[in-house]
Length: 157
Image (tube, rainbow, N blue to C red; front, side, top):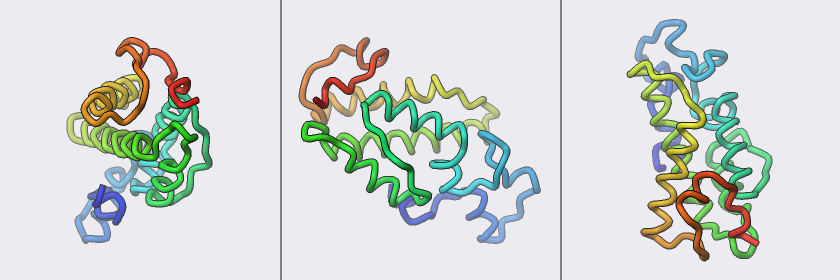
């Protein structure tokens, strides 16, 4: 979290700024190959990660405009909740989502694995399920099956 908030992740744009030579195609986002990879693009503007955020927002029943800056996005996302939606839960969900996007980026770039949105969403939900059980992030009970297959917005009303 510290590195993403301070733009210290080794994204392609940051590597180029550090004078690490990258080929013309190496600097492109390997999820979409449309733009130079930067934290803003990778976590917020890449078409594939936009789909991840859209699905996550539907899953928890929140909606927001996405700022172009990851720090502002974190602040906005963390404060989307209703009275029962804890800011803590949304903050942890944001951290989990960005971490698994970064992990997916690395698997794609270094292990030649394809970006699979459904697999990433499943990973986010499963990890968050275990964190919720450990840290009691949400009130209310939900089965693992429902957590993984249905929207959980009813927990927030």
